[in-house]
Amino acid sequence: MYFRVTKNHINAIKAANPYLILSTVTAFVIGLYYALIQSPPDYIQGDSMRIMYIHVPSAWFALMCYTILAGSSVLWFITRNPTFNLVARSIAQIGMMFTVLSLVTGSIWGKPTWGVWWVWDARLTSMLLLFFLYLAYIFLWQAIANKDIASKISAALAIIGFINIPIIKFSVDWWNTLHQPASISKLSAPSIDVSMMLPLSIMTLASLLFLITVFFIRFRIEVLDNKILRAGDEI
Amino acid sequence: MYNLILRDLYLALYSSANFFYTSSFFILILVLLPFIFGTSIDQLQLLFKGTLWIGLSLSIILTMERIFNTDYEDGNLDIILQKNSSLEIIVISKYISHWLVYCLPLFIILPLLSLLFYLNTSDVFAIFLNLLLGSFGMIFIATFVSALTLAAKRTIFLKAIIMIPLFVPFVIFGSGDNSWLILLALSMLSFVVSIYVSTYGLRLYGES
Image (cartoon, one colour):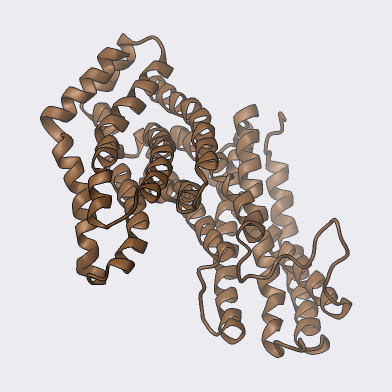
């Protein structure tokens, strides 16, 4: 908990950057090959369900990024270590990007499947609310001139906004609306075929690598911007 | 505590909002309905409950800056913080005075309004109970957002973006029937969160 970012960490992140980009691109090429060419089309939805291989990972990571955001805010409150604050700020923008991606791909998928671009379904609406939570977090940071107070306030807001995550997760069960319930859960065998599970796993891995790559770039920028390196370290 | 509540009530009475202003606001929000959706009474009855929730949210969003921000900007908050040793007492008195000024008028005129829309007594009572329990929770949320965002001046739309997602659970359960127990639970939960976060916001302001 007394971890402090040093010059060596920043240099290691910088050195790892090309390898991360390379592995991200490789994973995306393999994943897209399996998703677009190898896997069979859905017997009801046809080829339009292939957008699932983008949609599902980005929705998962949109929620995961908010969990990390809230978790690092909690850790920041406990330890007052500025590193957690920078983690929260770096992950917020990536999470917002994944939320937008899942909303956009979802509505592109919805047009051929449901016949409309958007339905006022519980899960879609709460994803939209998640987008506004990210937006409020990022804008609140910019609205307050005193960065010390801004970090405290936005951390508190992130923790309170975390209430929205269970609402998103369970809204489908509570309201029982149009969006299909989760096909893959930890407690039971997945109700998805292996031929679709494989490309989905590879695409999830690719999205995760993409998240890590962008996160490290953003984190390095935040550290350099805020100059929170240990005394004596210069870059 | 009584002094603080009385001060806020006097301020509201003489300057910003008395009973007639706030009740007129709710009536006029409902008067807009027939102009938008036509005069078919069946349709208006369907829209009545939702419009009341939107009116309540709007009145809280519009006036949330008066909870702490105006006192902060004209310097009164310094004196209030000096005079009162307990931050919790300040926050609780703000809940009470703000609810009395900006939410109570809605509940006084609600029977009259439901008469205009031909609702029967049991329906009105259900709407009344849901709105009453929901309004407490929404005031708690508005108070802590106001206390937290003291440093962000003149950003009412940002505060609305922060608050509306937090209002969503109240609106979900408030629009349902027989859900007053869940609304009561939500309000109690938001009270616990709110009193802690509001005092945290005030303490931050006191330090800087």
